[in-house]
Every structure is written in structure tokens, then in C-alpha cells.
Image (cartoon, rainbow, N blue to C red; front, side, top):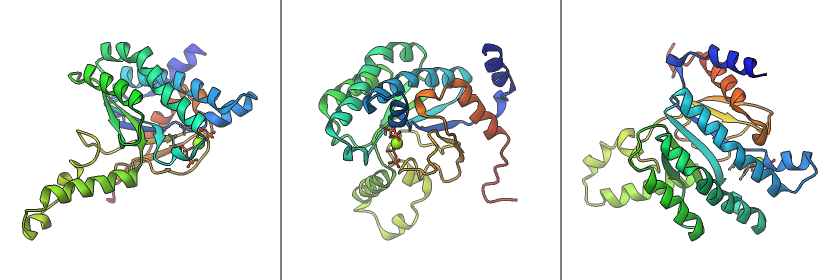
Length: 247
Ligand code: IPE
Ligand code: IPE
Ligand code: MG
């Protein structure tokens, strides 16, 4: 098995990596159900899987990795499940942030802070502060994240900033200017968007950033999505013909 993994890795062209990879970490609930366990068991297993994918991405030389951990719509779930997911974010940081820091990973949180409980924000802020001077892989923790909310929030910030500007100045606003108001400090387009678990939708994830992303869907449920599956997705990406509207 190990040699098989290495073979996939060896096929990857290191000069043609997707610069920004985004993953919708979906399928924890179904994974648990398959083992006759409760959904929260799947979330625990899913959280444990995160570090393998982060390590593999960083080792490969991926510049930016965005992970969808909790959407603005996930508040609809039972309170107990939401609490479990929030606690898992804290546990993940406790367990792995020192390693990620040593790996030079720079952490960002993308999402609305408002509704996120203080005990989670405190831990996230600690991790953001710890890694703030790192210049390795950018890891975006997408927590209470929604694309529509992000675009609306950007518009609100932009309007506030431009309220005393002339109509001519406002007319001159371009994409570059607009992108500064999105959640990320250093906006980049998503190159490869991966969704495990068999669902074929974006579920409000990085829709602006993914305008020209290559989409990769897999039936594997997130807790089973291992580094070799990531390598396969990258190989698939490397065989795509990206035209960006050209010929
Ligand atoms: C993804 O797994 C985790 C979060 C949304 C937080 P799900 O919990 O959505 O798993 P399924 O889709 O029900 O299997
Ligand atoms: C998307 O998965 C959100 C995360 C993985 C964090 P969902 O399970 O919430 O998406 P839908 O409801 O199936 O679209
Ligand atoms: Mg789901």
C-alpha cells in the first residue's frame, strides 16, 4: 500500500500544483451511520483526519488550503451536534497548533465571528496570534463561513469606506479593490475545489473565489479521505485544460 501511495505522489508534477486548494469536509454523519454510531462520532473522526491532509498539503508545497469546518447554515443542526463541532475545533487547536506552527503554517479564520461562542474564538485567536508571523502554507479555517454572507459583509465594509468618495471614484472600483474586503487578508482564487461524500454542490462555500476553480467530487466520506485521495485529486487537476474563457 505504501509503495502505491508513493507512486501516486511521484506522478504529481511539482511545478504544476494548484496554488489554492479548498475542501468541503463533508460526510461525517454518514460515515458514523455506516458504523452504527451517532453523528458526533463521525465529527470526531473527521476532525482527526484534518491533520493528515494539512500535513500532506504543506509537504507537497500547496500555498493555501481552505477547509470548510462549519457553515452559516450549520446552526440549523441540533444544539448538541453544534456544540460537539465547536469543541472539536478547540481540541484540534490544542492538539496540533504547536506542530502546525513549527511547520510554519499561517492560520486564518474565514467566517463571521458574531455567532461563534467565546471559548472557540479565544482559542482561535490564540492560534492566529501564534502563527501570525509564519510564511509557510496559509491554512484557512472556514468557521461560521458562508459565501453570500462574505460578499454581503464585503459590500457593507466597502460602502462604509467609500461613503465620502465621489461617484467617479466609486466607478473606478475594480475586482482587486473589492477583494480586499473579503475575509482573507491576502485574497487568492481557488484553483482546485474538492468535495468528498458524493454531494454535487457548493453549499455556500467560496463561491466568489471558485469562479474558475476546477471541481473535483469524490464519493469517499471525509473521515476516509486520506492523503492518497488528495494526491489523486491533484493528479486529476493536472490533467485538466484550464482555459479561463480563452481558446
Ligand atoms: C460535514 O459532515 C461536517 C459539517 C457539516 C460540520 P456532515 O455532518 O454534513 O455529514 P453528512 O453530510 O451528514 O454525512
Ligand atoms: C457543507 O456541508 C458544510 C461543511 C462541510 C462544513 P453540509 O453537509 O452542511 O452541506 P449540505 O447541507 O449537504 O448542502
Ligand atoms: Mg453534510
